[in-house]
Amino acid sequence: MNIVACTSPLQTGRIDNNLQWFRSHHDEIMSREPDLIVMAQNSLTGFVSDTLLRDTDFQSKLDAALCELATFFSVPLIGSQDQWLHGQRKHRPLYFENGKATELDFATISCERQTVYIRADENDPFPNDLPVIDLFSQPATLSAPAYHNSIRIDALTVADCGGYFEPHTGFLHCGETCHGGWQQGIYTITLTANGWRTSAPTTYAWKQMDLLRWQLQTILQTLSLRDVVIGLSGGIDSTVNALLYQSVVEKDHILGVTMPSSYTSSVTRSIAKQLAKNSGISLLTVPIKESVEATRTQLETIAKATGVSLSLDGLPYENLQARDRTSRVLATIASARGAIFTCNANKTETTVGYGTMYGDIAGALAATADLWKHEVYELAKDLDDFMGGGIIPREVFTVPPSAELSSAQDVTKGFGDPLIYPYHDYLFASWIQDTPLSLAEILECYEEHTLTKRLGATVEVETLFADADAFVADLERWWTLYRGLSIAKRVQAPPILAAGPYPFGKYREAQGEPRYSDRYLAKRKKLLKK
Image: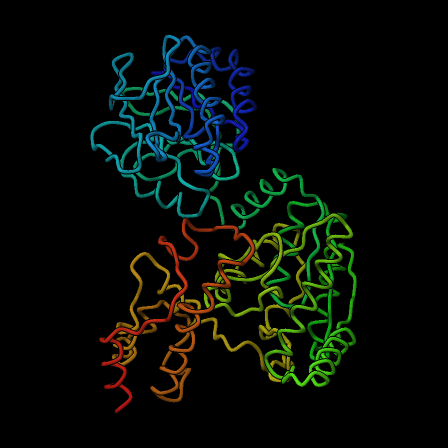
């Protein structure tokens, strides 16, 4: 059986353009002498929102396009398309032949004494005795190869090269990717009695860097965004974002901005300056001390004159600095340059809301907000190698992560963020995973001295806290934030570039009061009595 897989350059929501690709490539596809043509899920629309999918004009246009596609080829074509039917989104496997598009209502196709099983839905099983054509694409995340690698039979999977799905068209043999990550094009795969055969090139497995670069580039190109403004603090997060954007945007279109305050150390100032020099991007230095003090003085003076109690000390003063940097400086510069400005948050911070709304939690896109802190460090090394090496100053890997908004965050004295990333990365991950680790289970593991192993943490948890009281206080501090105010912050945060299928859990979050189970409270009481 001669199968032609079509990997098209998907344009989300642009039915005419997506249909035109098949029209213009008709001759090339038919020159491969196919017995069967396979297109990916949603090849005509991309993965669009329910709002667009249920639009009646869009539905009519899609129906007409499906009918037209059925007339293009003289051999059978299979694919799948989401449609709005009976008041809900429905995933429809489709069979095109003899000028008609009908719902695929059979599980196998045979030709030249070869039979292949069509897996049309994510709930369909994988047979043990037949090769498979998998019409159900996986979202563009690093879990997609893991999903493919769980397949223990021969399977052909086809995905479009668009902004939502990973270009992971290829076939697999007993869970091992024989050919994967093909770019847009037309590929011939022959099914024989001895299995699949193809002349398509084999490509290496994607790294996190490859995925993020591909997603970021696709989004920027789709939205016609060319110019980027990045706040450079001298820390690892802004460093990684600077290199990530530079890997897909010409350096002349990137502007770095450093905004030192009274608490910014010479160490981080030097890192930001050296990074800009090494990478060749322009750098503006905009001190914020005067503007912050002017705002503080103005508000406190007006409040005092009108009898209103207002004190901008402590946390309010830290937040004032963060908002001055982003909402005033970065947003204004980006607007003046017709550019976007970035959100440099990581997943650890975003999980518990460790950031300032309209301050560092602001921007057009949060490209690294689905990466735990240790993953940000790993990405930094990969990006530095990709960009030629020697771009990232070595000091960025040793300076303590710090917001540098007060004397309590002085990196020259070893101070920094209140987060212990080698522990909290893994603790927070246990809350977000498909089957979350409950607080009661965490206390049990702590009491049994197995928590480090259970979490997979890279530091011995028991060594971090003086006693059980300190451990519980830390646990409840972050849990209260995770199930409390951080939900509001995540809802209002910039769009997150997803490195996994559900960055903060599969189910919807709702703002509410943080809850502690009776089981947890009983174990807590018992533990703290010891």
